Length: 188
Image (cartoon, rainbow, N blue to C red):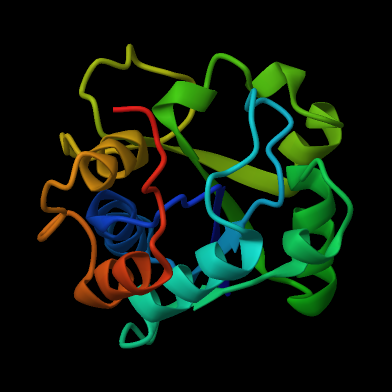
């Protein structure tokens, strides 16, 4: 079974994440993509704005009608920071014989060698770069390219300045953001 593992803060999940995951399924003939929200990324300077529980709720709402997408909350149950190798080993135990593909954003490619236990990780997974900027030079990994100018940072700023996020996130995610009053105090 070919499985994509898509980790990130997903603060919030948005349509660019979903579109690139769907493209990965189609391009690589993946049977499923597992979204894994990080507790705290070792490379981010600050913690996510929304709690792990709320980010998990938004992810589940966003993928609920997509049979080939699932959500795994394993990183939210481990003490931070979230290391990809730990997640991959856990999924590998649950999916013996699965061919694992680690989906990473183009902004993470340069830093991959600094990832915790990278040499081991590189032997277990096949890295696939999700390039939504169109600016990435040709990396040594397969690339899924689709220029999509949507970012979680932009969404949080729009919410803080009382601007619409319609069409940037699934309706169910927008409802959770509104109901929970998320991102209200973000810098504009």
